[in-house]
Each structure stands twice: as C-alpha cells, then as structure tokens.
Image 1: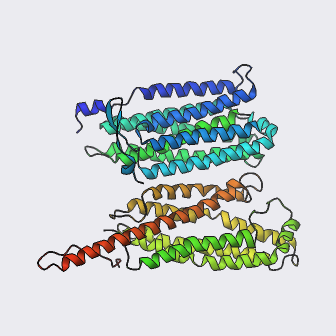
Image 2: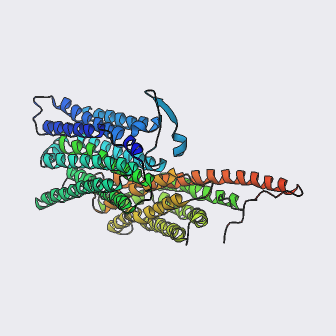
Length: 96
Length: 201
Length: 265
C-alpha cells in the first residue's frame, strides 16, 4: 500500500485543530455579544464586530479546511473578494 | 479553464509545492455560484430589515441563540472531522477516514435534529413562515440551508462508503475532495446565517 | 474521438435560434409588449389586476403571440443538446431520452403560461375581475411552481458532462458544476405558492427573479459553451481530415486514421 514515509508526509497538519479551536472561540464570542454580555458596546459597533468576525471565520474555513492555501491563487482571491464585498455591502445597508 | 491549467508548480518558503485544486473546477463553479446566490439572499434580508427594523428585532428575540451557537459548533466540528478524513484518505488510512467521516455525519444528523426541535418550538407557539417577514426569512433561509446539510450528509455518507469498501484499491480522491468542499460550503454558509438571523439587530 | 457531427452548422444554427434568438424574443415580448415584468403584486385587488390587463390588453395579446412563436424554437435547441448527449452517453441513452422529454415539458409549460395570460387579456373588463385575477395568478404560478422538470433538465446535462469521455469534450467539465448550481437555484421557485407577500412571492427577487434569471442564464451558458466547443471540434477534425487526405496520397504509407464524421446511429 502506501509506505510509512509517504504516510507521514501527508499527515493532517496540527493547524486544523488550532483553527477549529479559534473558530469555536469566535463563535462563543459572537454568542456572548448576542446575549448582551459584550458590555456597553455601541449597537453599530457590535454589529460590525459580529458580522466582521463571521466573515473572518469564513476566510479561515476557506484557507485551512477547504485547503485554499495550497490551491491556485485565483480561488483564494475569489473567496476574499466575496468575503470583503459582501461584508462591505451588508454593513453599508445596515448603516444607511 | 480546467484544473490542470489552474495547477502549477510554485516555490514557497524554499520548498517547491504543487498547487492543487481540491476536487475539480466544476466543484468551485458550484461553490461560488451558491455563494453568490446566498449573498443576494443576505442583501435582500438586510434591505427588508431596514424597512421594518423594530419588527425584525422583536421577532428575532424569540430565536434561541444557544441553539444557533451549538449548531454552528456542530458544523465546525463536522468540518474538522471531514478535513481530517480527507487527509487520512490521502495517506491511505482508509479505516481511520471511515471513522472520521462517521463522526462528521453524526454532527450533521444532530444539527438536523436540532433544526426540527427549533421548528417544532416555533410552530407549536403559533409561529409560521407566513407569520411575518422576519419569520419568512428565518424559515426559508434556514430551510434552504438545511437542504444543503442533507445533501452534505449524503455526500459524506458516500465518501465513508467509498473508503470503507476500498480495500486495497485507491479511492477516487477527486470525489472525496468535492464532497469535502461541499461540506465546508455548508459550514461556511451557516457561519454567516447564524449572526445575520440570530444576533444582528 | 471527439464529437463533430457532419451537420455541425445545423447544430450551431439551432443553438443560436433556440438559445439566443428565442430568449431575446421572449424578453421583448414579456418586458416591452406585455409589460408583465415587473410582476404585479399578489396582494393587489382583483380590480387592480383586471385594470392592468385591460389597460394593456393589446400589448399583452401581442406579447403572448410572440411568446408562443418564440418558444417553438426550444425543440431545436433541446434536440441539439440531446443529440450530443446520445453520442457521448455511456451505455443505454437514458439521460439523452430524458433531455428530449425535458424540452417537450418545458415548452408546453411556457405555452400554457402564455395561453393563460392571453386568455386574461382577451376580455378584460368584460368578465368579472375575479376571473382575470385567477388567470393572472395561474400564469405566474405555472411559471414558477413547476421548477422541478427544469432542474431535472439541468441535472441531466450536468451528469452527461461528467460522463463525457471524448477527447475534446464539447462542453467543459466546469459546466457540470454550473448546471448543478443552476438546478439548485431554481428550488426557491416553489415558494410563491405559499406566500403572497415578502421576498418569496411571485413578484419578489428571491421567489421569481432569481429562478427566472438562473434558468435563462443556464440556457445561455450551455448555448455559448456548446457553440464554442462544436466550432473547435469542427476545425480540428477538418485538420485531421486534411492530414488523412495528405497521408493517403503518399503511396505505401499507412493513411492517418481519419475521424469518423458520421454521427453514430
């Protein structure tokens, strides 16, 4: 089958676990802001934070789970464009 | 443009790394198409929300943030296990991959059960998709997303079946990666849906 | 072996007529003549709807006539895609047969929509406004709630593209991803039956405009990629034919394999 050295070379990177932990922590953070434990943040700032964090999480999922770091740059650029574009548009509507 | 045109050799940090398209070009056309459609969904939601901000805020307060957050963590965990499963498959650890995919499937199943519980709560409280504009968005968006979860579950199920039955033969890595990418898309969409529907007011 | 039928010119013509000319005609008919887009509000009263049909009765009648005419080209388009399917399909041509059925189903649906709206514009104001209201609703619902056969059409084409093992596939593999995506985007078209207001009603972005644009977008994508693919194959097989002819003119040398230009029976 596959030899030992080749196996080790393709072992799952530890970064996957760290990214998962970070994503979970960010989810908890958003939840806390949502239930009002975020302190006396101005509502619009809180929204920007929660929404911004969400799009940041999307980017992390894309880069690490979807393996875009080792993919042709075009895919990363397209995802980043979506992330930034949609965030800007939504915040623009929210603040109008 | 096809996958081999996209792929090329590059030098990163002194090591040469081959660029790789997870799945194939068709996979990513689907993913970006779905992302664009959901972007339109989100924009429409925000536009309508501006007109009826207080109604939306009031209705939103009846949603359970805990359910939403738990569901987010479930899909994130599913993504972790799917990604681990893909790596295991590439390395030839098919039995391990099978278990990893099974855990991801369990996460999806629990997500769907949660959804059913949430919907049942709402409906027994007399809240339907036609009750008002907010609940319309809530049921329709989460429902459409749930369809994605079901398809993602089916994909991972098929992936698990493939690695379980592979024996000594090589599995179709392209299909495995396509299924994994679709799963991550499902996760990704919920990551935005949760704050948009449950938190932001 | 690549797909390059002897009547490629006819293929391209059918794709253009059914996939480019016909949608243009339908757009002019619906948008400019009938002016039924932007769509009426499902919560309008019967009198309001009847007035809309009465005010533009002639325009609607002309528009529906054009739609009936323009839709007739769909069979040419569908048949061209089905012919490709039959050539590349592995095993018994199940999906190819389903493509033939799909174009028939979709054409009939569109004809029914046009017929219903034409009926509404035949005697607006003379009959009870409730009748006009119902016919208007019928048109919109017939437009949207039978989304599934259209999705099936997209999925079948997608599956066929993935099956295509020919050397120069007419449609690139990424079109399969696009086809599946379009099939998915049509799903919300079930919603206008459930809601008369909101984002998923028949006058709303998510309930009507997205499915409409998505389906036309898919047809256009198939048309453009297939024409491009057919043209490319025609050039390269003409080149092969030339090579074959040259080789054959050299005595004693094996002629280069000339491509089989007879599309299989």
